[in-house]
Image (cartoon, rainbow, N blue to C red; front, top):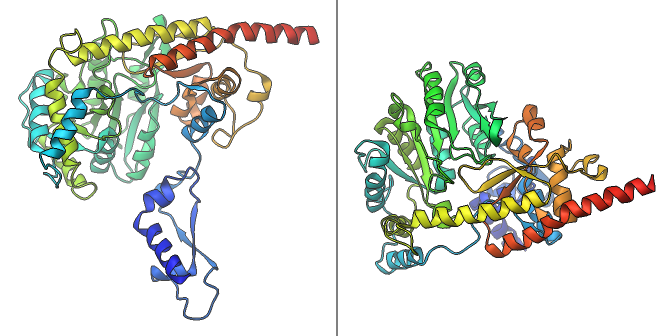
Length: 482
């Protein structure tokens, strides 16, 4: 028994991320038996005391609030429970291209299975420099102006660790991917939130005056996501220039751009880059990854591009965080980026094929939403559609009661629960991407993922087409009852 307890205790402390953090409800304080605590030098079981008596280990204050359930803890199980078509989580649910599979096999077969350079595998760094130099209008040094990360999420983490500390502020444009605020908190800094607002034509706009009012000398980072999750907005060059003019009033401020959807654009949208705006190269970190473009989210290969001082700071963080992104993955992505330039399935390159496929899927999804009485907002880039749900009535039983992840129920959250449970289509309430003060802005919207197989979209269409008809019948039945 003592041996089993010893093994369990060692497991808990050797792998905290799996033993604790992966669980949806991490206790605020970590309870340990005295036998476990003794292994940490905190107690001794030799006194004859009951080894099962609980002791408390305090979590770091930087994790405050992380034990709360999230939108993902609620809606993913909810979709499974009710057999809903899941248009919630945003990852491509189709296989990666065969040339990607061939690339990873080749890397392993060529024995590229040991550590590589901490700052990034040279082969990948060279391909990235070659790829982005013309896009950024400058010749990039692959060893000093490009670095690798464990996906875009870890790239963001490393950037925030390098640039933020206690007393600093990071400005986030809402709705904002929920990982931003959590990572800012882990860096010891404070998030300041500036909302995008719906604009004529179904687009979204940033009020420069609101941004200017939010900035102070404490602001060290502005996070700019374009193409934007979840709104689908692609910032124009004029908008970037307006933001840059405000940013340049603050010498300490760095723009961290999340551009993971850079290759997924619709219509005539053009992906403009903050790093190319006059005066912004020296104060911009550009982040992207292979995951969403090539349906490789499990590979976790991302990168950062920027001026040597900023990249060096990120490298300094990562040599103590992840040390080295997996070598075969990096080599494979290097080969993939080269292969993607070649003709693919009747298109001039893989990226043209990707955009054509997403455009087709977007049209299918938008038509389905319209049939349900949901108005799709303009989508210029990325893998999501925001829908205006204001024409549909949400039953009172959903709006009147909170959940663990949404104690103070909002209309968008209630709508998405109703749609998942009663109509069999799961979406994500965008209030999850707002701070508490701005959640009301999301009330009439829901986020739907485009990046699903044709079969999933076809079945979702059938279910959504029944929504408005069923809603009308339900309203008529209610009026008869009255």
